Amino acid sequence: MTATALATEAGTTAPWVSQAENTKKTPSPELVREFARVLNFPVDFFYRPVTALPPSDAFHFRATSRLAKKDEATARSLSTLAIELSDWIEATYRAPAPEVPELQDLLDSDDSLPPEQAAEALRGAWGLGVSPIKNLLQLLESKGAKVYSAGGPLQAIDAFSFRHGETPVIFLNVHKSAERLRFDLAHELGHLVMHGGSLHVEPGKEKEQAANDFASSFLMPRADVLGSIRGNLMLEDILMLKRRWHVSAMALNLRAHRLGVISDWTYSTLAKQLSMAGFRRSEPGSDLLAESSSLLTQVMNDMRGQGAGFIEIARALDVRAQDVRDLMLGLVTFSLEGNAQTGSRSQANLRAV
Image 1 (cartoon, one colour):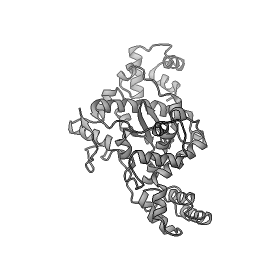
Image 2: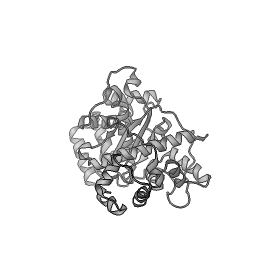
Image 3: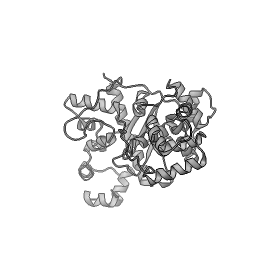
Image 4: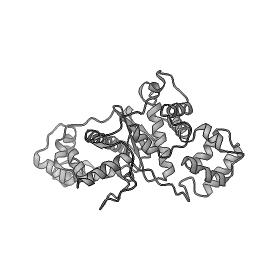
């Protein structure tokens, strides 16, 4: 909402709103109530202690060149709510401790590694071997990461991530196929592992390509791909094998080509066939279900068991219930409206304290 529109609705002037935003003037309690009414925020929101935004170099945004400044500002602001919700969860429940290392900690040195070797090193540290990862989102949550939805006010953003202290925080645009959501998760994991601390690199195509290469290697380990493919690939083989690693057909075709499993001609031919069949934008015929958040689902199940829900969490944070719902959109296994419809019981270690 623009300052002019807010001023008109609240009965003041745009310059006055600007001065209030920049802490040069303090609104009266009556004007604060008008701001709260117009913006649909609880009055207490305006009296909360100021929460500092994470530093700009802590964020890993995708497609930065296409990201409007207002969308980036919204993302940074929404990240503070995610931090507060994460802190509330950790204060209320015993959640897994953060175990997503930065590369220099993984290697115990400031040396860098190519993305594929970085992915292999992380798999080794986590004891994953070369087997396919059944549920990446819940794996990351078991390592202390917090995953939230950007599918409410941030649909212009693919995905982004940052660290809150030791805790990795990942935002996903949930309006995608299940296969592409997994790749986005692995992409952001690549940023968190490779592009933080002393190895921080500026945004750009090179950084994004490195995160893509990490994601491809992490989801489709070299040894497993080479051991699973026999002979040249045809379209039917791609559509069958992509189910093994829960990846998109296009991603598997590219991975096979980069590993030298298929020729340039085969890769190009398959890419054209897949594009014509609609696989460039979606995964036609896929029955893979989008991964859900075990952590957030358990939190909401516990809240529902107490006769509470989003409203009570929002009151604890002095924000809108809609904002809390938006953070969980597409990630919680029961309906966000009406009665809870719980999915299968999770085995994650989350207990009330």
